[in-house]
Image (cartoon, rainbow, N blue to C red):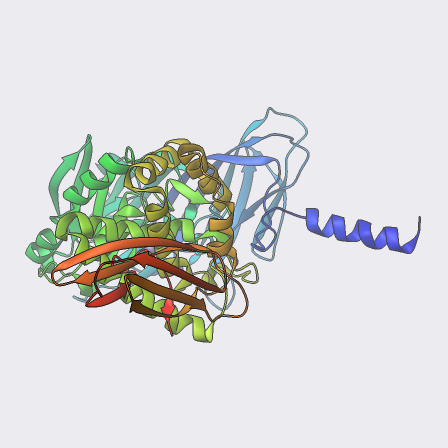
Length: 528
Ligand SMILES: [Zn+2]
């Protein structure tokens, strides 16, 4: 064995580490969580919670260590681990670096249940704070990986599971959580037990609870899914008005993409560090955004679109988060286009395009940026706005009919599952019969966009247009449209650009009044 061979072997071994290598979360190789049962006790005397998580896990091989995330106690915050059981017996485990490492016993089948008991004051993830009206409240705010601060779990979206929340809290609270309410019992000792169950698999990033005084109202339903508003009593009418449109949005996405995945669609006014957080079936909206003036229409469409993209068809690696955010961004635009027409689509894309340019100057990176290892850094103009633009360009390339057929097929294939960008590409290729490799390569893995200098000339029956790509790092290939304007009439001509410089001619009887580049907003480019 020579040195060179060892070097090569080392390289191969390093590359084999994981296909999701850049996303640095260490996965459980042979264990798949099936179900979580989270028992939580909340009180008014302190912010300490008492928790018991029961994890049902399916082992493909029972030989491996099974790792569970739980943030340990430091400086007054975090959880003190009290006990870990496998079935009824004490489990063989160690607890360090915020990981419970269980070694499964040699006896027992592939399906095991672990119970983890703990208590402590969550530093993050469960926000225990007064509402803007001074009411005590508890809100789950997990995205991207804060569930482990208050729930013992496999805290990465690759391993989704059905979930049950059993919440014991003083009886004066109203309690909502991920799933369908299956019990509300006054325990007679000043406490109330409220239980919710969600049978669909949910990623920990979008599991939540809301515990405070609520005003709640039924808003409508579509496809058997109940839509509701849960708002502070002080904002009762404003909140019910703001969330009224949620049923229409549910109907639009359900009928165009496919069936909604969760037990309900609740819209909750909440303490959250985000404007909105797409928690599965129980969406959080920042408390100050509820005004009664319907200013959250776009935000609602975004968070509701996430129920399909991000929540149900979930990115398998944080580096592919555009499958969540880019989709939510573009499906918001599609909803607004449905309500207000095509001009609104163009207006939204124009705004997004400016933001992409501004971001690119400081952050010249592609949508799938494999240099990012921390999930807190994956949210940016590339994954939102540029991701949305990619879908707009794909729609134009395939045409509306094939685009929507592809979207439906993608969702039908990956509902309640996990996806990578290549899975989306494969579905769109299958439905369209087109090779989209170059399209996805240049828009997802290459930084930037075409920076174009162009002009037109008319001479003796010929319109001559030239297009030059000025960016140095890559020659993009794309179709581009020109609008030839004469009086009130506009004639659209499309050409394919494959080179740094492209020139073409159109036979035209008279000189046009003007020529417009990309009048219908189908190409992400910057005019130079
Ligand atoms: Zn989003």
